[in-house]
Length: 238
Ligand SMILES: C[S@@+](CC[C@H](N)C(=O)[O-])C[C@H]1O[C@@H](n2cnc3c(N)ncnc32)[C@H](O)[C@@H]1O
Image 1: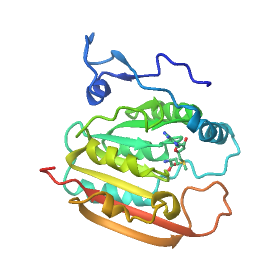
Image 2: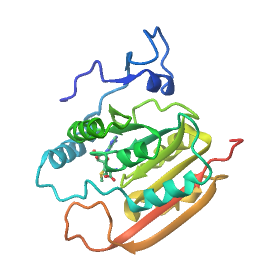
Image 3: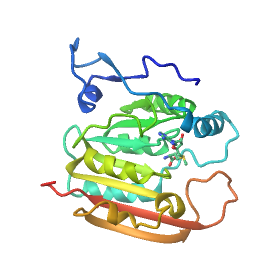
């Protein structure tokens, strides 16, 4: 296991509130709070190494600077109803942060979570250069204690979720908040269950499965693939 056990990651005060940390806080601007969650475990070590190599490679071919076009569309759509003051987004499997950066530029405070620390290093540097509010969390999302009703927007872009993650993200979304999912059909719906069925009672603004060239790819010459896109709003009462 290459990841040190404590501290696993630290978040600034605002995010500590999001993650439900209690305890003394020196002030409301800069205090750091260590969150106790297991580090990425052996189960994820293969993925962690694979992605660490990718983000550390200066010749990598994945599209890094262009955010997901679908996420941009969703942000436009969500902006029509206005952004809550202090709105918080979480980018799950953020990688080197192409999407975290546009979320932050759109006005969200962003928490970017990933098992691959080299991607988060790049993201922190790019966020700092652009003066954007992105906080990184190096953890396995399946072990991180996501708080309930906390996020105004959840981005799950080219991440392969296990079904249990949908339940956690459902609970973590604030009533009236939104989730954006985009990814390979085989990864997003491995058991064939359409994503809308994971979010019963939500208002589905977009759901499609199309054949297109993915905007996240291991190789630049990747052809078209079955892509799932989903945008939904959690009911205010729920
Ligand atoms: C295909 S990449 C997509 C990155 C980013 N969402 C994008 O669209 O550019 C998937 C990312 O998920 C991360 N990841 C995989 N399993 C994870 C886990 N269990 N917890 C947190 N991050 C994970 C990988 O390290 C990788 O950065």
